[in-house]
Image (cartoon, rainbow, N blue to C red; front, top):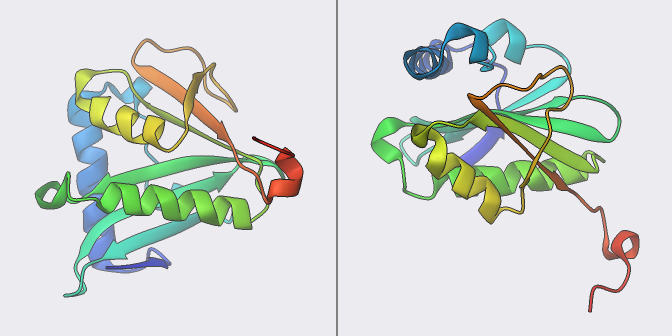
Length: 163
């Protein structure tokens, strides 16, 4: 599998993301849906990655959105339905956390759903060190949303002795 920054110009990624937005709208009312559309993902403050399998097919995607110099938001995480629970999401979250750290961010936050459908996503984020938090950025409390965050460290000198 290959993970690469994508310019969101191809028809294949547009269809993949359209399916994502439609799925979110089937689960979550419009006022609680926070998935970005293509225009939102093409904004300069967003970096978008696509995961392709060995045949070149898109099997996953994810993004980070710059909130400020030290804080970014994980956005648009999706795995192809046929490839769920195959490790793609873990591979991608690990990549995005590393890239966010490399870009100099010190905090990475996210919003996901509170419904049972989103339980695997919440468990994935917990596995990568995300903890629950209050709404951040422009979010407001919503019973259909869960907010999570984690601190990123650029190097061991910043965290001191952890033993």
